Image (cartoon, rainbow over the protein chains, first blue to last red):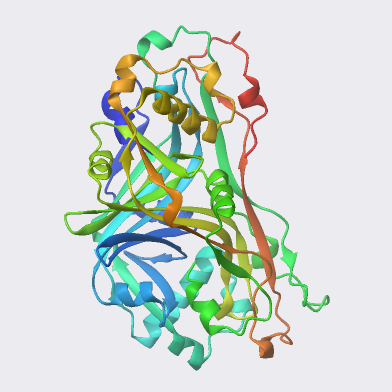
Length: 216
Length: 216
C-alpha cells in the first residue's frame, strides 16, 4: 500500500508491517482472499486481470475458458505474477504523510502449468467453488463432459511467494505524538448480506446449509 | 472473474455483465474502490503490487516514496496496467460451471507522468487521503517540506480505461432451470467497524466527524 515508503522512511517505534516467506502464512492469506489479480505481459505491456482462484497445498489454481486469451497466454508458459490482497482497515496518523492501510497481501511469481489429469481437475473444480462458498459443491450439478472440455485449469506453484502484512496503529513521527489530532484505525471487513434467491427459483427449494450458514 | 469464459460460452438469457469505456462509469468504479493493483514489467517479468490511489478528473494518481523501486520504475515511463476491483457478491448457479462473482472492475493501460507542480501535488496529496476517508485531510498535520521531498506523485491518464460490471442473478443453462437446486446471489460488501483509537492517543482528543461519520 505504498508502505514500502513509510516503513523505510519512518522511525519505527512499533512493529506494524512484516514481510514473510512462510508457506503457512502465505496459505492463510490466500485462503482469506476472494479474488486474485493476475499479471502477465501481452504485446510488451503488462495486463492485470481479476480472477477467482483456489489454493490446494502448495499450488494456486486458476480456471477459465479454453477460449480465454489470458488462460491461453498463461498456459503457454510465460511468467506470471498473481497478487491477492485482503484489506483490513484504514490507518489514520496524526500526519497526512503517515496515513496507510492495514492489509495482508501475497505476491506469487511463477509459471503456470496446465492441469490435465482428470482426478486432479476434479479436485480443482471443487476447490475453486469451495473457496468461494465452503461445502457448496455437493449441492450443485457437477460439470458435464462438455463443460469440462471448455474449461482450462492451470496451477502456479507457491515456491516463489511472499506475504506482507500490516496491522495495528499508525507509526508516527515522535514529534507528532503530542499534537491534538485524532489517530487510530478504522477496521474494514467484508460481510455477506442475506442471500438473494434467483428470480426463477422454485420457492419450495430450500436454502442449503452452505448458503444459509455462509459468512465471509 | 474468469467471466470472459462463461459469457462467451453460455447462452445468455439475461444481461448480467457488460463492458464499457464510458468515462463516468470508469470514474464511479474507481471512486468506489479502495486499492489498485498496479502491474509493471520488471526484468522481463510482470509484477503486481497493491497501492492506494486517488482519481481526480481524468487521471489516476499514485503516491509513494522517492526510494520505491516501483515508483521509480513507473516514473521512467514504462507501460503500466492499473486494475481496481470492487467485489459485490458470489453468484451461485445450479451448475458448478456457471458459478461466478458479481463485481465492478476498471483496467487502465497507460504510462505514468511525474507530478511536479507544487499546486498539483497539493491537490493529489489531499485527494489520496480524501479517497480513503472523505474530509479528513484538514484534521491532520499537512506534509512538511521534507516529507514532500520524500514523496513521489505520479499520474496515469484514464484515456485507455475500460470497465466491466457483472451484477444480478446467475446465468443458467436452460436445461438446468428445472433442477431442484438452490440458486441466487450472496451479496458481499465492505463495512467499517468502530474506529480504534491509537493506544498513545490523549483521551480528551475528540473523534473528528470524518472518522465518526465514516462509512464505506
